[in-house]
Every structure is written in C-alpha cells, then in structure tokens.
Length: 314
Image 1 (cartoon, one colour):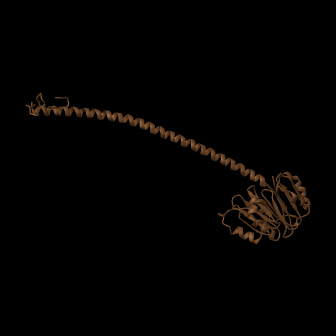
Image 2: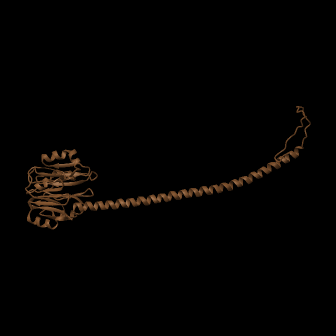
Image 3: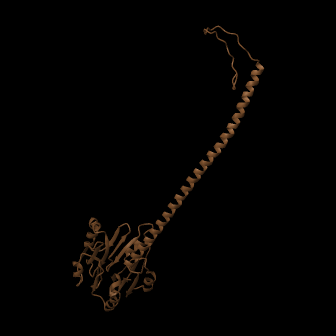
C-alpha cells in the first residue's frame, strides 16, 4: 500500500517467467474505505489550496489595483500638467495677440482729426481705435472696422456702395479703402481680392499680380487732382504712379522707402517714409498749423474737396 491508493501485487519467479503467481487480495471494504479516506484528504487539500489561491489572488489583485491606480494617477497628473501647459500657451498667445493688436492700432493711429467733412457727428461717433482703414473724398467718409463691419456717410460712389451693402458678412472682410474725386476708389479684402475704379495705368499696375506680390502687396492708393493721377505704394516701399503729380512731391518720388503717399483734388500732397520722416505741401493754412502740433504722431492723412482733410495720429 501507498499513502495515495492501493495496488495489486503479483509474484514473479526468479527467472522472470510469465507464469502467474498467487495474488494476495485485500478485502474490498478495506480498499474502498482507504480510497474514500484518500479522496477526502485530497478534497480537504484542494479546499486549502483553493483558499490559498484565493488569498494569493487577492494579494495579486491588490498589487494590480495599486499599479492601475498609480498609472491612472500618473495619467491624470500628466493630463493636468498638459492642460496647465496648454492654458499657459493660450494665455501667452492671447497676450501676444493683444500686444500685436495694440501695435497695429498704434500704427494705424488712435485719434482722428478732420476739417470740412459733412457728417461730423457720424464720423465722430463711428471712429474708434478698431478702425482699420478710413478714407474721404470730401463728400463721403468711409470707415472699415476690425470685426468685418463698415460705416460711411452719404455720397459714397454708387458702385462701392452697392458692393458693400450687398456683401455677406461671412465673406472675407474689407481691410483697406481709398477714395478720390470723380468716383474713383480702391477697396481690398482680407483674402487679397481687390476692386477699384480709376485710370488705365492703375489697372495695369494692379493686374500685374506677380509684381504686387513680389512687393508684399498694396499698402496705400491715392488719387490726385486729375482722373489719371494716382500713387500706389506697396508694403516694401516700392511704388508706382501715373498722371500729373503735384509740385513738391519730387523728393517722395525719388525715395524707395515710402510707407504712404496721399494726394488731394487741389494739389495737396503728403508722404511718409518707413523711418517716420514725412513732408507735405499744397495744404490750407489751418491744416499746416494743426499738422505741426501732431507731426511726430501722424500715421495717415487724406484730403477731400474744398480744402477738407482728415488726419490719424497718436
């Protein structure tokens, strides 16, 4: 007998012959009882092992839970750190955007002075530092705003009026406008599209898109005393002009660093260079007296009929 069961044994002859030997038999009842006892023992051992397995599984699950909780905590911490970095980056970008907007507003001019223009209350009421472009021809004054809006007084050229009044606000916003006598105008949009009414030489210059792009786009357009007179300045200082220009503007024509040229219907002119230097001529006395007070802060000047004008400055 062994401790795990019982066996029947068979005697063999010494020479290993296959003859059967007498078999010692145990009583069946004793064998069954031993088998049952052995079974009970194994079952008891199995219960103990199951308990041990359950205990060890609980320990393993505890380690796994701690590991999962640690991984979740690490993931949460990393997400919070990333969210903090994203928030910092958003604040940085917002701060930079605000600073950039302030620089643009200062470059455009935060103040407006004007003389002789109809619609004084409308001009004063509508102008603010978020005006991206303002123009006058002495009859109508128009302003374009940062938020795809515009305002104008009576007398705007019909074609320009219709273009703006029928334009959906979801389309690229207008960003620059210029007016001149004899219904001349120029209007540019945020996507670079342009519409205008003016002399043939201006059309040829504007339709040479490769040349305009080479010089970084249009900065200002001015219309002079006669229909053919114009002065176009690009953002890198390159310029093109046509028609009869007023006396005294020769120095501006010789420069290659212009940032703005303005012309009037009665021989007025003004130019400014990238280094801030500027000159003017053909202007009324009251204009000359005022401009001397704010010369260093002037950012833009436009002239209208009958000695009218507007000045942006800081």
